[in-house]
Image (cartoon, rainbow, N blue to C red; front, side, top):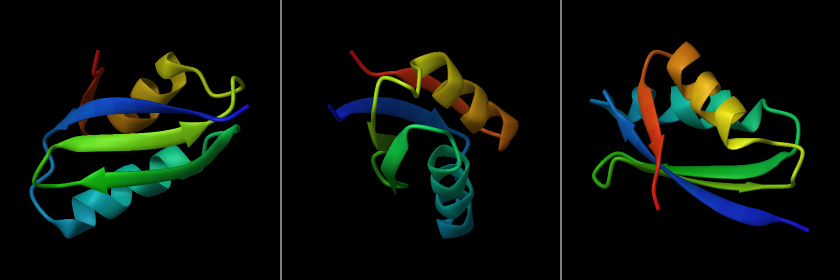
Length: 71
């Protein structure tokens, strides 16, 4: 069953940054979709249990940005 996790993303300055973060998240196994907002510094990730929060944060960091889970 799909669930949504929200990440706070720091370091994005333009729409290309948004695309980099979205692509990094969408490439993860178990991620069904990702919407990233530059103005809100937020990523909404629709995923199955296969995609862990740790993997999402690692993917964002590998793309060059910082991420934390919104609680």
